[in-house]
Image (cartoon, rainbow, N blue to C red):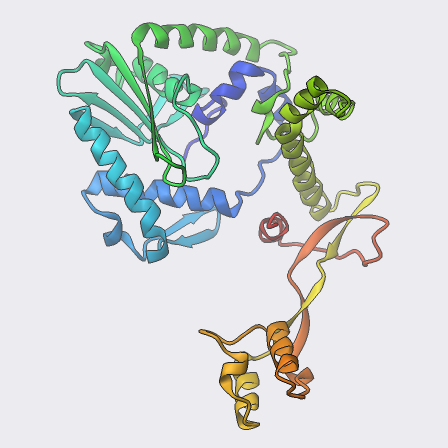
Length: 379
């Protein structure tokens, strides 16, 4: 996938903070987390269905690959995929979409501004343009005045490949399909004049992007910005938030409005600390340590055979699958069965994590940055 300087997913951030691009120019991108890989796989499934006339159940077993990470589409993924697939087809039917562009790569400024949208469609009478985007997370995204959904029609109207689609367009229908939220489909209709107004605002922001010192304006749009952990403007914003308390209803309301933004900033800083430490950068006050070791079976089959051989009823240590080592020990204790399973159990850390330098655990050297970052961020 080609990524330009400004794309649909960063359009809202660019409008709000033109300086984010300059601030991020020398910062390496972070590895995609599991949720991002899962979402990308689901996008790929929907694209294949629309392009090839397939249904999600026909694609079970498909392997999606991204940056060396494989994600297999399984039967467990079918519910989400079918919800998105059926919702898409209903929208296409309801709007009488006749011409459909699937994942078209659109450019507003060649080599600089543009990207790939999920679906762009034109009704049979040529008067309605559909801009559709899939979201597979649980945080609701609305279609109304959605910068990403307006960004792609703006690009399509200028790109020579798709400019002809706008010859008769009077109405734009922006659609978010999000299988994991109530209602699934969120729709907003607007006019060409609304698209004109968006383009005007976007161009004003784009002019600022190319200034020697483009302005930086912190806010909720800082989420996922590569520069967020290093941005002085963001740091000052978070500092101001820490000065708020709960001394009055107004102060509490102001602090509450900042909670998610500050939490996201802290998460971003933790991720960046973890990455930098793994790259060998010394950060005063921090180190990488092993997570607390947990008891686990060395060989589950041998442990099972040993218990069966000693005439322990399997119902004690087995449900649909064998219980974990701690669960089995607890079950044996409850059943007043005295067995030593030390030979079958090992203390094994589940990975590494970030810790203050004052932590009593020894620092470790980790090289699998991508894998351990994903593990660290599991809560």
